[in-house]
Image 1 (spheres, rainbow, N blue to C red):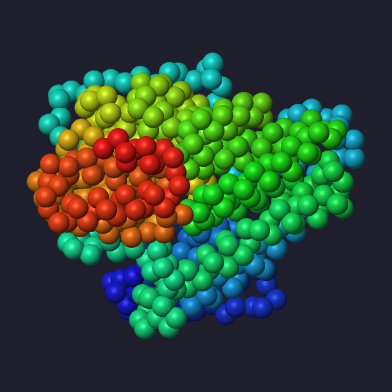
Image 2: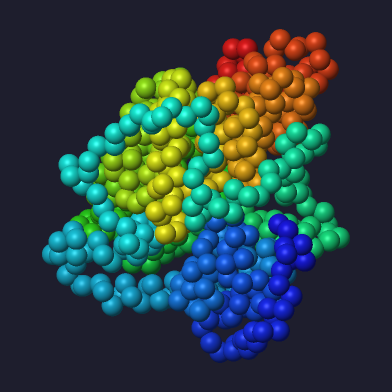
Length: 551
């Protein structure tokens, strides 16, 4: 995070606008909004300037609605704003009472809607009771019927474009288009946050370090300590509501899915897998009991998202067979629940598994099928880049890649905002840039790949995402004829705990090692090879070991 003083703030803004007095007796959402407003004004930023500094993750209108108390912000939003504005935990401290207040309001609404004879209601009537989370039915999102959705067609661009350009500027990409890429070519440039690979300093000296430490503290408290207690709370509630569950246990299951999704990138996949599996077992036990039609539909949906998490985790743990099985279950449950958003995301994850298993044609089919089911433009943009563009790049279809990237950029432009709950189920401009960079690499366009990967490194904020962006930068350097620099960057990436090593990182590091094989006499190349071999051995991933052995 940049310190407030370095953000080009307007010092006169705080003088033109009066700070709000915070009433302790007001609602939690009102107190948080007032606190955010005061921090922004004290930083000398307009809402638009603050939105730009989030890298397009949140819009000016969303920030304004949070400040006015019109919308409940996500924990990701609160934590990011606290760090960006140097709030010193003042915003984060507003989060627990806000979450409690929100849970009480939601529980009260569900009790008012609940019909004692709900079993006699239709699926559409009873499902409404549990269909309030943004994870399940985003506001303004409609469900598309496969039979009526026109198939996605790929047109040949004309005239032929000599190189892959940056995506067209849009509301969410303009900020990154003019920002400089990170120093990807410099020694020691893997500028990960201190909490990524090692504990933060005990007493940070400057404001930027304090913001990073605040972020680390927040994640440690809200993710690690809260993860094990999620299942305990659900089990205790089931003791009260009975084995079939009730409105509170259903609400807790929604929150559990959101918690796992947000904890995904900050938790070793082996640890998270066990927690998600136990939660799905609880849902399975509830489905064994008699349920109203709407409650059963909601449990199918929760089980579907949990299965999607297990499938993605299995892929990252290098178990492709298990990934296929869990994702197939997730897709079927999504179809049974009538939720095309879940099915579309699953198709993207299935496409990713097939892509990394060297089956690009099948990956392309799944990605296009998911786009036909996508409930909103942002999901279509994700699938166009996540699955379609990269599959076409593996097949050497340059014009197809161009068309998919351009279509994804237009979809981002038409999307008002990201309404996803965050974590592994979200999609961002940084992620889009990352997929574009990888596609360019596979098409042997290193200059374009370096530009996209640089933007991705700057915009993304998880260990795995930054590692993948850096590996793309290293491979681009290798393709541009600088093996020493490529090896140095790759070695820096591999300075990470083995428990955070996921299959895509191993595969991309192995691709880098393969491109450097003819320069094996260089000391930097030998050092990178040794680090990669040691990390693979420590990871205990059988597919990772095979991938490295194939070199």
